[in-house]
Structures are given as structure tokens and as C-alpha cells.
Image 1 (cartoon, rainbow, N blue to C red):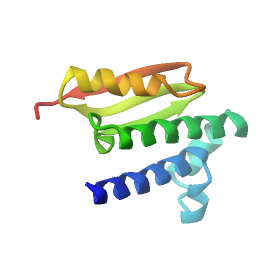
Image 2: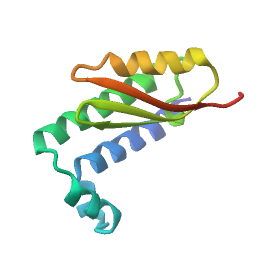
Image 3: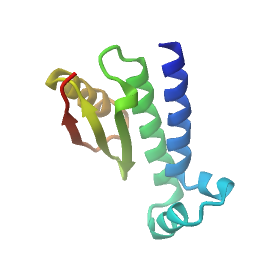
Image 4: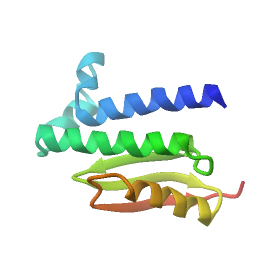
Length: 118
């Protein structure tokens, strides 16, 4: 369990840095991420706020006993959180949505989660 949390934290840091547009420069990935950053009209402040929301939601997923943070991807765009991934029961989906809504600055939550049998 402890190893899973470290993996989740590493994934969280990676996803947060990618969503701010800074990490692609470090790895030289001008392809996908460079194009994405060039097309993103959000201000630096909004990008930072979105990255903060994403990080906060993922951190609460990691610390929650019901939600598996490794099964759910969190993306934030202008305060709207989108959850992608899978969940084993409606109760877990509801919990994930509730957690995402609880972050300061969240304007809405879109669930694109898919239920899979455990």
C-alpha cells in the first residue's frame, strides 16, 4: 500500500507539472505538449489555479480509503474538474465526485468514469 501511494504521488507531480505547461520544456517534448500549450489561452494564474485544484483532488483521492487514486485521472480546465477512469461501484463514483467538488475554486465536476466489475 505504501508503494502505491508513492507511485500515485509521483504520477500526481507529473500530471500537475504537465498541466502547467512547464514540464514539457524539461523533457523537450515540443510535440504534443508544446502544441497544447501554444493553443491554451488561459492565463498563467488560471493555469496555476487549475493545477492546484488537480493536485488537491488527487491528494484527497490518495488519502481516501474508498477511492483508488490510480484508477482515476483528474483534469481541470478553468475550474471545471473532469474525472476519467474506472470505478467498481456507484458508491465509489459518488465519493470521487464528492471529493472533487470539495476543493476550493471548483466550478463544476464532469464524470467520464466508467463502471467496471471488481
